Amino acid sequence: SPQLGGTVQTRRAQLRAYDTKTAIEISKAFVQGKIRNQINVLKYFSKYRKEKEPLTFQEIEFSIESMQAMLAKLSDLAEDHIDKLRGSIMSAEALAAKAYWKAVGKLIDKNASFEGREHRGTVDPFNSLLNYGYAILLSQAWSALALAGLDVFGGFLHVDRPGKPSLVLDFMEEFRPQVVDRVAIAYVTRGRPLDTKDGRLTEATRKEYAKAIMERLDSKGRFEKEKVRLQAVIYRQARHLATTVRGERKYIPFVDSW
Image (cartoon, rainbow, N blue to C red; front, side):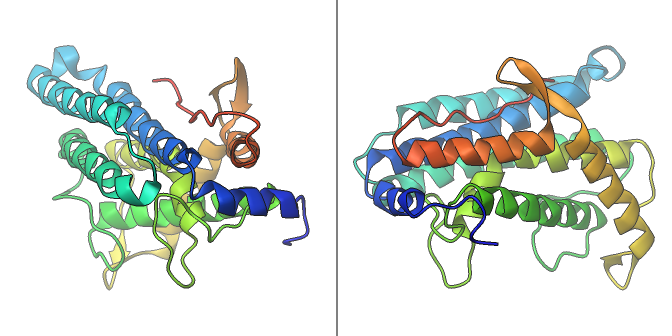
């Protein structure tokens, strides 16, 4: 319900923030959080390969170095309006993503075929797994933002389009690697079946994978000097975003350990 926890002041502040440097700071924080979490996911899955698969480990380390370079680039970006900087932020994110998905391919190549990231309409089982997980995450992020009193259609990094929940897409970036990617990689590398029918994941596969996602959301991560369930972290971060647009704090992305 839009009445739950929402305030007119928060939404007015959110819309005003778009034309200030707050929009730039928030957008950069979302992407920096995403890349840092991507790096930690790669470290998590590659730590056991240093001795057993040194070549794969080195290739993943090279990808991490490329991603760290994009983090440094993001920190140096500066402008007076998000419209002038959006392209540069998205470019850095895309370059980091290219290195990331290449490394993910190395991690799962013995268990699944993965030629690269594909979005809606894909028939590739691993991409279908990711897309299904992101749909679950999107619903969690949408609910958290609405309860925090924010307008889910008023984003900063993703451009406005009719019916597009731009703020949800912005906000969920930092959570994609730890909530979805980590589960998908583990799901595949542990040999769980990726059964498909007519180019889609079977109902049994979807149910088993959804259960794994919900278990991940129920697990705890380090957040604000304590162990907090990841689902609760999403809701806390939505409230932090609300206080940020009101000018009461600086938004700091959630970065889980590896």
